[in-house]
Image 1 (tube, chains in turn brown, orange):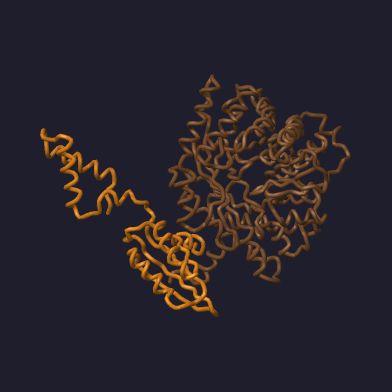
Image 2 (cartoon, helix red, strand yellow):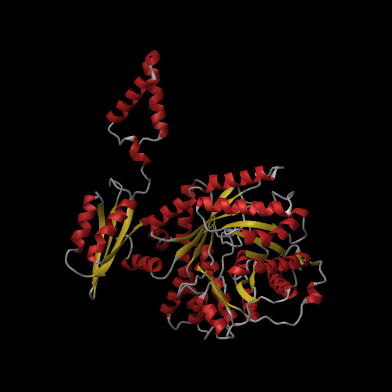
Amino acid sequence: MNYKFTEILETIRMTEIEHFDIRTVTLGISLRDCHDRSIEVTKQKIYDKIVRYGREHVKNAKEVEAQYGISIANKRVSVTPISIPFDAFKMEDFIEIAKTLDKAAEEIGIDYIAGFSALVQKGMTNGERELIKAIPYALSQTKRVCSSVNIGSTKAGINMDAVNMMAESIKLTAELTKDKDSIGCAKLVVFANAVEDNPFVAGAFHGVTEPEIVLNVGISGPGVVLEAIKEAGNVDLQQLAEVIKKTIFKITRAGELIGRKVAEKNGVPFGIVDISLAPTPAEGDSIADILKAMGVEDVGAPGTTAALAMLNDSVKKAGLMASSSVGGMSGAFIPVSEDMGMIRAVQAGNLSLEKLEAMTAVCSVGLDMIAIPGDTATSTIAGIIADEAAIGIINDKTTAVRIIPAYGKKVGDMVDYGGLLGLAPIMEVRTISSKGFVGRGGRIPAPMRSLTN
Amino acid sequence: MNFTENDIRRITFETISELGPGATPDVVKEAVRKKVETSSIAPFEASKKDAVSGRVILTSFGLNKPGIVAAITTALGKANCDIQDLSQKIMGDFFTMIMIIDITSSQKDLKEIQEEMYKTAEPLNIKIYLQHEDVFRYMHRI
């Protein structure tokens, strides 16, 4: 037989028991040709284009799923940052566009559509300002639309005016969606060094340097890595890195195969495979459990950051060997609400916001799906965003903040969104003020790229 | 070999030029159909079938009992699937069997065969998975 018994059983075990799945196949659609002077015509053009390209997306993905026996958890769409082609519109128009995106997403049967976005790391156009003002209303009046704003980059520095605006946006979104535990904030990401080909919603958008249409795939297998580490037993760290790399190599290869097949079926070019380890609230599908299996007693113990750094680096190394189309975020995600191990660590008092922030310096995204008290000051949220962006621009990596100031909730309460978004304990935030600093406004200049000590 | 749309178009144009002025739509249609039917290759409809074909890996496992292999192979035989390789082990009470099957000449596509096998698995209380060979090739071979 061409394949060994153990190889075949290993694949079956990964897909059937250890939650290995393709987290998302995301169709990136350019909307740059959809602008018109009339908002009604614009809306029609947007709707028609998304439906035209996306109509078969879910069906095609399901067929590939059955063919290879690997489940594809999410089928999604990302679009050109809305502020770019539609810069001439006003806030009310942007809300209308968000509703159009929502309707198109519903029509093609997907749960999220991302790209209600603006890139304002250096400065803002009038249209971008209008879009940012529209975000809270857009997110509270739609179900499927996700929004992201890039407020900093290594080349431009941090736009503190935009940071302050986003902090206000987050607070208002939380208030407008207070009936549903401020769920609007779970669909809003503030980035530094955002990537243009990220397939993972909510932060996905179809960058301006991307082609007309492209299919990107995000893979996910924390459960597979966890089992491999457990099986390896008491080995030294080099051997452990080897175990992680071997596992990631295999799932990246499978991810690329699936991505290419879905792209082929859709008749669109294949873009990238994002090799991020993304957890889900399912038991065993947890980054926290991996860190614990690596040897720390719980997430938050000294040594956690080092363990995460090694995990993240091993993921990248193996992914790059396995595929020539690696892109997106490609690292470990550490969202709190989507990871049972993280939730438990927060509830046990072992994991603080400060430790999470330190961990984001060595992993793929940032402060993700973190619920904080609803009465947290806007300037404090701006301070959290600025800190996270600083980690990103100084280390030349993507960082993001997806934070939920849950309206009316206090430390110790929980918010529960169900499904993939999971549930989050409200975390404690320091109440000493950031106001004097973030309130200065302006821009933190771009960092230097030498003497990096 | 299956007909593609291009083949049909080529045959149609040839027929029209052969028939010359007598080429009314009905006559051409009839002549083209005859040519397709007589040319000993599969009819056009076959190529409309999902292109999923080739080698598939069937994995089955569950508590051992008599008749499992018989049930699986009977179902595969009915679907005209060619068993190319087979490996089977008993581990304790557990039965495990892996087959490489070629479904190219089957009248059914992969999805239909999968459904067929799930039906076979249910009364035997075993699990059967069918996955395209590519996924194993990609994961375990560089």
